[in-house]
Image (cartoon, rainbow, N blue to C red; front, side, top):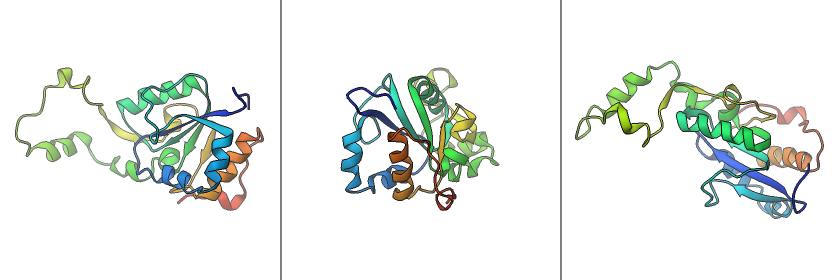
Length: 183
């Protein structure tokens, strides 16, 4: 992988999900020191960086696409990343967030917010304040092309380590059969 300063520019993103994939990444424990020696973390929910940067080598996308902001951010990620990894079952399949797909989102919103202390804000103007909830939750590959799928709920640290070390060495990421399962 071509890098600057001999370090891979790594980004991690969290869409609709529980953050378990990021927690599993942190469960690399002392191997995080090895990872930090090989990468510059240029964007992540664990870092206070506001704008997705240019020239990212690898982006791990955790979570399903649930709203209009996720779609916009996914497109920026794809444009600015050499490799995009669908990170965990929510990103790969929609998993738990997609359990709402058989339900009517307008009915849900109406029932949830009908007991609020005032009327719902008008549709005009709210789009600048809050993202629009999508009628159906989507796995990331239904919004942008994905280069690698890393399943698991969450992927265990060994699976993450195996994929990252192969990727960072510039080798094809082919996980052993026992690391290709979901859940």
